[in-house]
Amino acid sequence: MKTLVIIAWNNHKSRRVAVFRALNTYTVPDRYPVPRIQETLTQLSKAKYVKSMDAIKGFHKISLIPKTKKFLSIITHCCIYEYLRMPFGIKNAPSHYQKMMNTILPTELSEGWLIIYIENIIICSDSWYLQLERIARVLDKLKGVNMNISLNKCSFGFEELKALGNIVSGLSLGVGTNKAEAMLLQRIPQNKKEMMSFLVFAQLSQATPERL
Image (tube, rainbow, N blue to C red; front, side):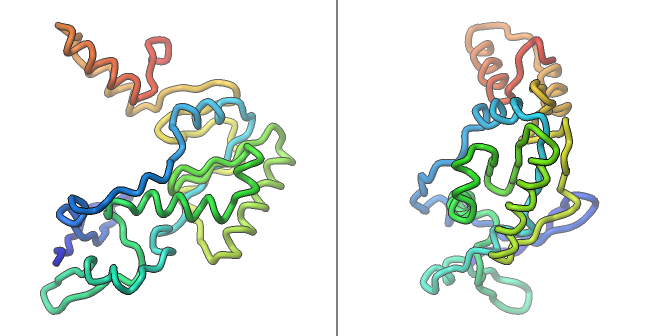
């Protein structure tokens, strides 16, 4: 049984979540590939216009098969519930969701102007007219599978926006404010081990000295 807890969420909201730590320990990982962030950012930096949007509770669009529901039961003060759709927090949820999205928009992905990184949907274009056309195509596909988009997380037709923690602008790529601040707070490495840790952190942050 998993315990249901309430956590703070964006914009002073709360969210109900279940802790699946024990279940995840025994779950065989699904190795379905997720796009590499560095390659994705490089692709983004070549576009003049970029648009990002997030699905509303996209994981819940995936129905659970009956035999898995008993493993995802949660206990409350009054009774026990079972998830009917894929919850957040289970080990293979991101890979299953990535697979679903790639199945919904295969043509757009193959044409090279659409990027899907789990719940992040990013559209790239070299002209404003083309951007509008591509947005319409993606929205039509999502509407066809009854998937809703969060307007609060949409950025339409920007020449610069924050994507995957980085700032993408026209033909350039920069580091997001939070990552830059975290880099600046790192202490100067004192030995080989600390230097290796710093370089790994910088690589994961997509940060280089000229971007800070």
